[in-house]
Length: 459
Image (cartoon, rainbow, N blue to C red; front, side, top):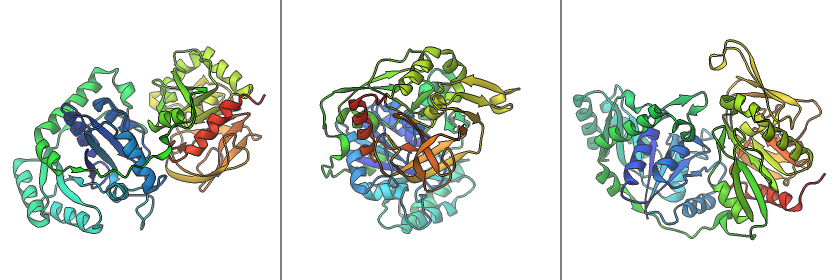
């Protein structure tokens, strides 16, 4: 299997659009497995859509190198090409000195060649200095090609390509002109998820335009020539089957809730779960031994969620009966009493309130201060799915205010949870948190969830 990593010199360099187009173009002639560095749900939804294979996440803040290789190799089964999209700038990570959480750390863990996307807006010879600095910064990171973005003219292209290739000895395999067509649809937490956007003809037209523009200005054969054979180490990870299917887990999956790492379904399957999906927007709650409600944009579908009172009331009853339920971020919002969207939010002229499930006494307010970043903490004795340390990620634009008597399972390293350093609200066998966990990195936690499903309601 051939493999390559595409990254940027900074956030906004254009690497997401470029990687998306490259994946789509390569998928026309080969089986392409994509990966996204960092804990991100939206970019992977695009990469999954254009390749037909579930994109996987790789993150060195929550995974050690052995687990990174295990996830990479598990996802790559049957693929001819592996394409990894980086996050932010190549060397950006969780720390100023160490490289945990960075694209560079993943490139080193997998020993992959790297193509660097450079935002060349308003620079020519300086682009060579930038590339040379990136190449020299960490000798273990192998930059083998460059793609220039935001090129304004033929003269700009010619001078910048010549400077980079002369001073750096690294080939420039593409020079993309500055173009409004390169912009993808955005929302308050980033890109619009592919599942939602695909309902819009304009959205799909933008995807096609990005593919056509980039396909015209990148030498795809030169890019393929930079790929290298990946050397498998036979890493297994948490994907080996440990139980025959003996529990049913219903996962909320629709336009409101679709922030899931694709490894979740494999980890659950390996642990003995039969998985079915349902829509809190459209469906009644299906019978199951346990429920998972992931993140998403419930605020964009609040009225429809309120209207489906059959599902809301059934989930509240299941929680009260002690059925195991796990919810993250958007799922946490759904389990509160109500969602309050303030005047001015998304163009509202006045405050709007929609009823949610009422599993937890309290409400969610939007908007609030945007919280983004890694988090670490510990699940204590109140956690229904087991104790232990964890690392995860938060990304939300809301404020959840729960009743004073609410119990919490998590103590975080920073004060960004539901109530300062407290996160993971608990009632019976329901756990709901702002913290997102990666299922491969937190496999023991999800096995604990399955064990709770196996044992049945406590009430």
